[in-house]
Length: 428
Image 1: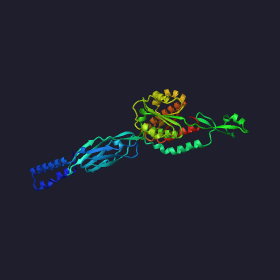
Image 2 (image 1 turned 60 degrees about the vertical axis):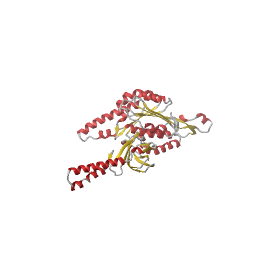
Image 3 (image 1 turned 180 degrees about the vertical axis):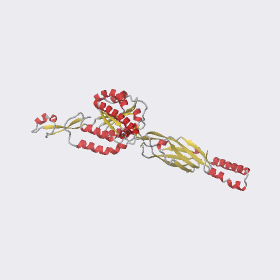
Image 4 (image 1 turned 120 degrees about the vertical axis):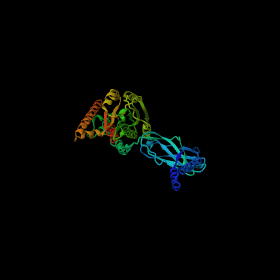
């Protein structure tokens, strides 16, 4: 049961008889009359059970992009009122109150705009129906459970960098073949020797059959394997410019995976902390971004340390073929030195390893401000943290690990550029 705005207006209308006959009995009689009329109006309101609801399926949508949900309503008898399609706040439902006016055996549809602001599976709370009586004083009200779910995917904001990196990839594939063979190169063709060519590339057998010296040329090998490891431990829960480090790492993973698949490389994905949360094998050239977004949609940071031996074991289970292993984990000195360093020698022995980290630009800004005494202390603390990070990065470099440490905006293109550099030099 619910009161409408007309009920208090009807009560105020009782001031007129009270003015003409100012007595307590007049007030009581008016209140009794209003209550009787309201009760009659409530009895004449159509029951909410006369409505049937069905919700149309919702397609996945990227976080921050608009979508709509459609609710089909069927009435078995005449009904008038309001329908509210309620969702959890992070769905960003707007315009979800709809006027209802149906005759018997009539059907209509209500569309509600949604704008998800958080990743994951976001659910409908319920559909509230308010059936108003003929006088509009009272209404029957009931909330019905109408299942609804929208899957909100990572936004992939770094896809704006994809066209320029694809152009560089095409240039890499179409330019003159490289002169020196590397680990990630394959034979391309033979050509005449020119001054400046490496003598190690001379093909002596082919030269013996020709009048001129012939050299072999090489091109970056395709069908390489890229393994992306996403850290979902406590360090990934930290926020940089009010965005979780995990979300920024996801953005970098999406750009790298899409670029690698376009280059003809196979992409594997592992996410976890103390245990493996997600594992995915993706075919080269497929719709990698969509599959990876779906796998990452419901990942959330766990307030626990990462068990890197478990994550490295998951990488090994995917295959022993040499691969580029990209560890998307914050470069936090204590977490890296105590958890990651002990297992890195085994990983580096079989694979090319890159550690990609989201850097907090606030540390650089804090270290640069030294005008007041409080800022001097803050700057000293920031310098200490930055020095420890540089020391940890130096240890990783000494082990043969590449480190890409950038802010959230710069990390995806920087990681993509590092991949292209390794591919151009035949180091994959």
